Length: 243
Image 1 (tube, helix red, strand yellow):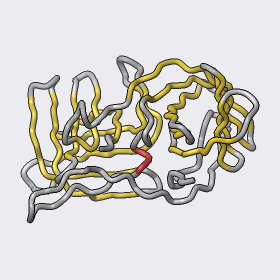
Image 2 (spheres, rainbow, N blue to C red):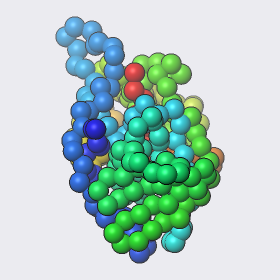
Image 3 (cartoon, one colour):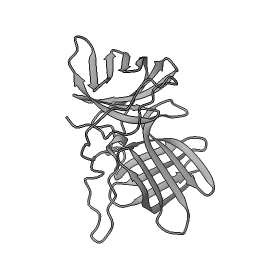
């Protein structure tokens, strides 16, 4: 069974209910099934923790104590779990009722719209609140990662073929496609920092694996995105889009 890389210490709750788990390194998810034109640079691989892992939807969970929020994505055999401080993949375990996923001493036991998270330091009792279908390449052709936020509305779309991104700001009033370079790539932590590849206009896009919720709809995402450009900083959520 392949696992997401170990990312950070798993903090779930003000009482530090979750601890770090050991996970084997998994093969990175290829960003694209497309080829860049000959002589042009290709888009870099992104950490697997930014993707849904084959799941068709994300679920948001509100957990007690400490009013923590989690994001999950299920496929046939594994659970991807995002907290405010990282991401993990848990293989399915045998259980009499419901669906239980466990990696070492960390487990997620789902029964309908309720779940229990167990760790050596305690338990979280969780209630599912909202679900969202995953973004697909069919709906977003040529896009490997999409991040967006509100007030003011903005988005950043990473090309699946070349190291370029499309920035849209001002509720869609301004759109630019710009080359970028990768200044930080931390596959274990699920963290990426992109910056402008020329001196014409400075920007920085920071992407980090972790539970994120749209400020208007509450929809769950597996990554937090921060865009810095023209002296302004924008915060939002995002998701990797596999082929």
